[in-house]
Length: 239
Image 1 (cartoon, rainbow, N blue to C red):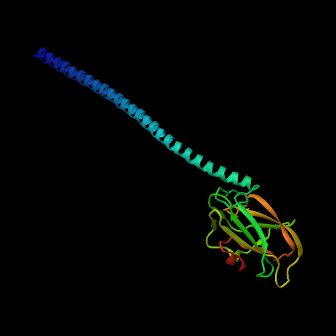
Image 2 (cartoon, rainbow, N blue to C red; image 1 turned 135 degrees about the vertical axis):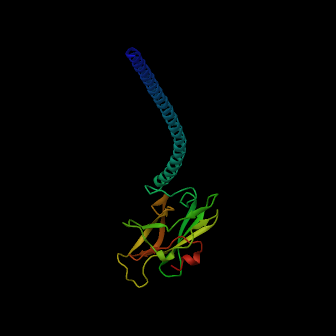
Image 3 (cartoon, one colour; image 1 turned 180 degrees about the vertical axis):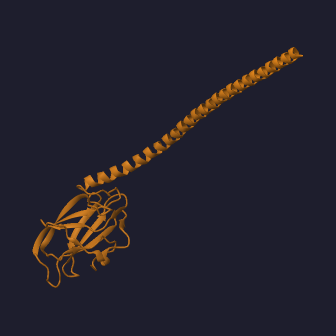
């Protein structure tokens, strides 16, 4: 009886041990599977990371295309700057703003003449001698003889639109030589008048200047001024 119980107990222990061993093996397998699964997951993550890197690289490629467009933009900007710089050099160091459509001494004839009315005035006339339209920007920049500064501009004469000349057409600017009241200073007879054309942006002169001899007895003083370029001679002479 005792022997039967002992054998039964041993068999039970063996069975439990076998079950425990099986459970341990299953746990190890699960752990291994989990570990393998983790590795697979890591592999998938790595692959995704590589894919992300490729996608990122692709995006960079797209940006590179955008960069090309930027270069084109930069080239266009440089072209404009070069054009402005060329204008500045031709103008003797101006700030740019000169182009082929600007009236200069290269495409106009310049004449200065006395007028009977109004008193103490002269008329400056330019005529387009070129084959294309040109625009007379702002006001002429004048110097009488060796004056240290340019003649002041009458801002009241500023037109609503730039004077644009077709070939053969003219624009006008009036020059007030001295105050009718005689209250000017540093009065003297001037012999020569140097004329510069203004750039479109008002930053300096455009093209080469021209110097004209003045009629004898051309008296100027500190009140001298010049109007903007205007398309109509009568309008110019009101200033």
